[in-house]
Length: 162
Image (cartoon, rainbow, N blue to C red; front, side, top):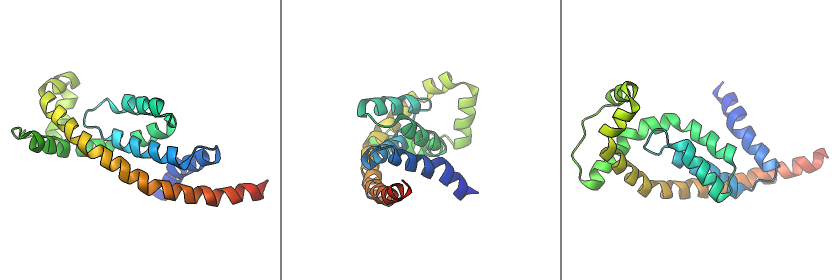
């Protein structure tokens, strides 16, 4: 079932973009940025950040947003690790908060949570800013040759079917 879901929701849309003439480089950058921006350690910002990146870099907006939405569980899972990394980076005091406490805070009131965690969050954003470019570069470097190979395999099939 997972293989069918992955194939239907991820692989087929990417193949369709390749068939429409979107370059492997643009798709790879859309996926890499969508994944990196999708784990930005501030809830509620990723959709806007992905849209801005797609518009400024002329990337495929649906592709970057699809990846962004799939990254939501990872964003939640990485919040506290980014908090910890930000604490180390800025030598800030340790904030004793568990995932369940964070979830309870968010459910109690998002604005209250933002006010309480503002310093911790911007420290986490700085840590993310240091890691994200490396992540994007690595994912991009891996995806470009893979997508080029997929495009080469798809091109002869398209020519044969005509």
